[in-house]
Length: 334
Image (cartoon, rainbow, N blue to C red; front, side):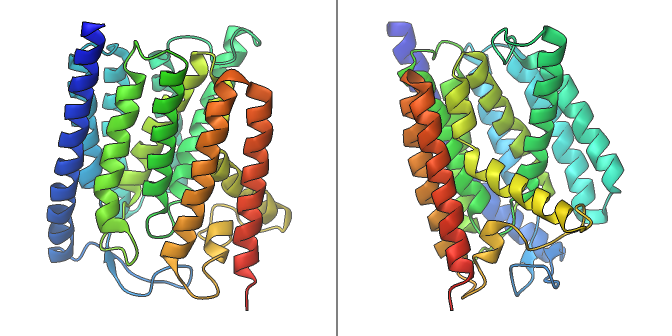
């Protein structure tokens, strides 16, 4: 018990340090990006109307990785170091994409390879023996890769990715605590992610003073995806599915709708539910608050699913459908 309290005290100290460091470093990175005119300039498909510094991941990702390193040094499994190294490599590649652009096939191959390496950092089968191990790994690879891509796709308005990261991290930490599965440091890693996202949200809330850029959204999606897979590997597959359900539904349904209409699905667009919800007034904060409210309900559903998976899943689907309906209703408001 004493060791547990010491570990929790260290995790809390790391979270406070991550929050403070992200707050300070994001402001410094914002000034650096602005001085070098590394800006996201509005185009036809943009959701903002003025140039905004792009590259906030240069602040949040190093701080978060430093926090995870401190947690690993205090006793978390060393496999976290594999995930940290791959996330750092993804951040470097994505920064190159932010400042110069990379062909889509190169980006996708790099993301696929990163997920393949990351499979070695998972403690065991994700599908709890329901699939042969080779099929389990293949399905896990595909799901993780899609999650990395959609985390990037969904980073399209002020505050939304920080809000989603805070919600998923909070849900993971609460779920493993409720299940009594805190021994491997998953909850501590999740809390550190929440702290980093909170620090960044101070600068990214509407009107945003800085954007994440691919250097932030891609490695962040990779790290959050790994936390969700850890949750599933503990047998908590229902909470792991429920927590990101809004992001999964919005990205997947939008992709399907665009594919069925014959659009080039790799092109930039403004067809996501949350993007269309901006149409009446361009109020990013109102839309992000709707997402936050839906995410809070999904956390509640995930906690129910720790004990009762089927009812929790049903509630999660209902909450997600209600959120999508509310966003669509807002999109068509006069």
